[in-house]
Length: 599
Image (cartoon, rainbow, N blue to C red; front, side, top):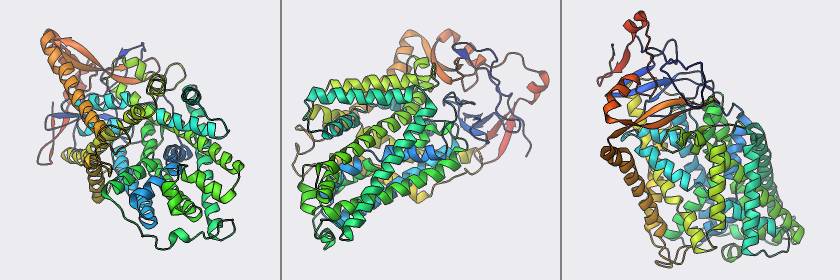
């Protein structure tokens, strides 16, 4: 049916350090605003995608041309995910997973279960990306669009949790430990901290100075990681063939389901599995830097999950072929170390393994830096963080300098400040529970976004997840939210800290409640006392980056402000051609599914 649309959005040709964006256009054939149930949706189209997409007007503006460039191709998508997935988990978690599941057979099923959990979650991310293909940041965008009301609540809560808990001190410590294991030196705590700081400094420099080179470096390290697991897998086949010093390589596979699993053990094992597979979502964080993101991420992201799953299972089978079950469960060394000791029996093999694991840990730092910097930058583009320019600007290197610097500072603090032991384990655990909470909301939010788009009569997305995959993700995250309250076998103090095992859970809930309290004071309480309201405007920086910026508008000026700005925060052009004004209409989706237009 024919319809008209609101006057197109136009960007100003003049560039200032912080320039207010005027209302302009997205397409010659699509309405630039849709309305459903009193909620406004604005059109956006970027150079990475051929189709116009619609998002809630409360969302950060689409950047028509990514200031970070378009350097993410198929191989980079593959290795961004691989580099984040293959960190230290496969080298250190098989022991605790076997201990928790109680048997060789069940532990292998758990490793295969990781493929199912990752694939279902991957499909949720991919459908979201098909709705918002020109927005990087993944969860930031998805939560913003699924829960836009109360305005800025979800953005504030997620931004606070993401920014404050964005440190990578754990992997820095792992990197330092394996660097020292390459020698016979037993480091002091401060020597370990010093090498951890040095390693992270190098990783930050690698990503700060040049985007394209950073991606190339991540690709090389990702290839090394795959080669490492492939080498261990092939070695496992050689062991099973009886061509090594291992006398009975199939011993662990006799009565493979012999053993007893506990509720706490299987839950803890599931956490370790999810930890080991984490990273399958990394390429979604850079969606606006990918040409045709849905198609490319769908293909290469799924290849990454399949490849890593096969190598994980083959690597674990290799471990089981060379290391007795009792040694795996009770040994103090990592399973990978035990594997190389039993197969090669000399220090050179062990040192080579330590070097490969150190490379793996370093590559994980780089991959996490790239992905999380885009998440933090997108939080800044929502306007809920102070000093908008710091988070959003790509000056002077064309990289996400602000997020990189912040992550560097907070990681250094978390390396140097907490002592080893309880304090370090506690702050590390703090990121687990809020992450599960937001993952749960994201899965539920996909159903909400579907309902909203149906009300708008928008076409079917390029990719649509199976309903069963969405519900499985919801149930998985509910399980991860409930089970941390379940006490370990050792009782109240039987966790990884000497105090109450669920302290980090209660603290995490406290942080989320604190976010809600802060939001109310910032958006409602203080403005009411001081006589102003919070409004958002679209700004453009020198490098072409676009962002929302929240401003304080005195109550006496609110009415005039609202007249001069559209629902997305863009200044409405004062001079409007009479012919265009006569045709300036908004497409409205009625509750009955019919479409109508209004002046």
